[in-house]
Image (cartoon, rainbow, N blue to C red):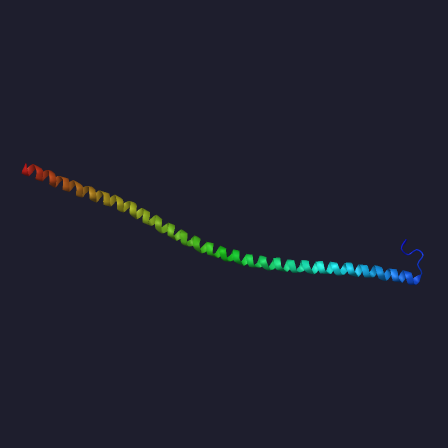
Length: 113
């Protein structure tokens, strides 16, 4: 009320217009800020959508790679079992050949000496 004291009707109307003008300017600044915030929020949303798609694609690739890796691990386990069994058979065969070879050498040494 201290701003209105001593003013006639025209003065009060002028003061009210001045106050309304100041409020309008404040509202315009607020509108600019809100619009700017809206644009930033939309840009962030777009980035998040892009990153979500990228993460989903990465997840799909990881799943495919994981299944391939599991298949390879199974094949390696089978190969490992076969190799262990094959190695034992190979060692046994080489041992038999070595014993036969040594027996022939011993027999030849006994016969000719």
